Length: 439
Image (cartoon, rainbow, N blue to C red; front, side, top):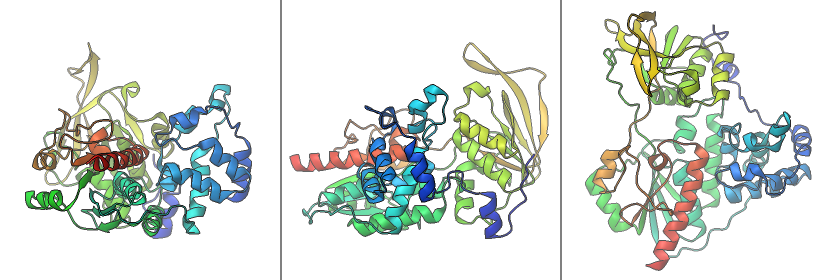
């Protein structure tokens, strides 16, 4: 049962969605950094997709060299602050910390990273000097972490970069799709503005590239094109009743919550369908909005795609979970009133319903966390190859089947973490540079 009341003011919302990784003060950062063993060939570095020299920046924090620590972070990852807060550090750098082998709490690497990077952003510390223009132009489609990381890296090398973003604000899922208790909107936007001040790329908002004419224009006017378009809307499940009012997709729900938190409509009894990290986010968010929440997943808890710590988070806010349960129908006249369910069992790797196990669960709001569609319509217009799961095919330099195109982030990896998008955007930028130099 949820202990939260529906927030009616910004102050109440902030209290309900208090940061799970709050910023450290100087004393906390000093004592936490003192715990680091500064391992040789550190496993935490190997676990970081962007390869940040973690022992080095922790040592720099410990010696009160915050500028040096931030330089170390941003030299590897242009979204140093955002990743410090939204990365699943529990399974990446902190999950690899040697203290885990001794049953000792691992170093809070993410919070230390945010501590140093916040200092750089708030004090506008300058680390990078882009080269003068080399006369070549690159178009980036999508102002998310992959696109902006690519733009930063290309800017350093003297390219004229223009980012085309379909939304009114930047940073993709880091802003629009990340739970408010992980990072506040203002933090993401401040980091993007910080990067824009120090790199020479341009962002054109509310500029969706979709028509064949727009695509041909970009191909004509730019030497290379980077795609960081992410994923599409929540996939339809083809469940009867899916078109009823108050049946919404998880991605769309989170975006509305992030951009208009006090205007969001939600029911008293919410059902969330899914077993991934996004399902955990919307379940936790719904509970923090004062709803009674039940998560339904068609497979077992052991088969769930979500990280264990994300599941424990929804339990801590009072959400309930029922496993091996599939929704066969969403019931209601105009709006959702209940869901018909059947218990399931795995036999020889296949999921089957259990005869006679049906039951009905009352609810007045349903959120589908059933995955997102791929942007294959756009890829077809660009004549780009993709696999049978809708992911763009790229080589080791993130170059697409047509050599003028490069890509990174969710449209390539199918839906990974912000830090993966940052790493891929940077690698793709180097691939673009090498390819254009050879030409």
